Amino acid sequence: MRRTIQLTLVIVLLSAQASRAEVFFYLGPNGEKMVSDRPVSGYHLLHRRDSLQNAGHILANRPVGAGEPVEFQAYIISASERFGVDPALIEAVIQVESGFNPNAISRKGATGLMQLMSDTARQYQVTDRHNPRENIYAGAAHLRSLMDRFQGQLPLVIAAYNAGASAVEKYRGIPPFPETRRYVTKVMNVHTVFRQQRYGSE
Image: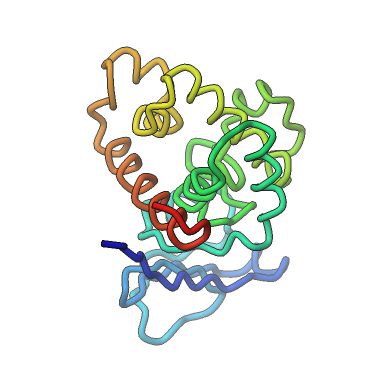
C-alpha cells in the first residue's frame, strides 16, 4: 500500500530588518512549525526571540512532508548522476535535514540543505555551505562514500550520515541513539514516498 505523508509547512519569509525585530516560533494544529515576524492567530507560541541566528534547532524534529525540491531539482539530478546516488535519497535527506531551506543552521553548526558540518564541507572542498549546488554536491558525494563503506545497506548509510560512520562501525549497526533511530526511520519513510511520488517506483 502506498503511503503518503502530507504536511503543510508554512514559513513566513522575514525581511532583513526582521533579524533585528521580534521573531515568533509557532506550533500549528497539524504539528507543523512556523516562523513569523508577528503574532499568528490559531497557532501555539513556542518561543520568542529577537534574532533568527542559530535558530535551526528550534525547528528541528518537525514532522516531514513531501517537500518542494523543484527549485533545486537540477542540482539534485546532476549530483545523482555524477555520484550514482538515488535522487529520491538525496531529496529525502534534504527534507529531513533542512526542509529544503538552504539557510538552515543547526545548534551544532550543521549548515544548508544537507546540513553539512564544517569538517565534511572541507573534505569535499565546499567554500559556501549555504550555496545549494555546493551543498547538494557535497552531500551526495558523502552519501556515495558511505554507500561504498557500508556496501549499499541503506539504513546503515543513513545512520552514518546522522551519527557518523565510526559510530555505525562501533555498534555494528544502527547506533542505539534515539535521535539516530528516529532519523533513519524518517529518511527511509520519506525516501519511499519520494520514489513513489516523483520517480514512479517502489
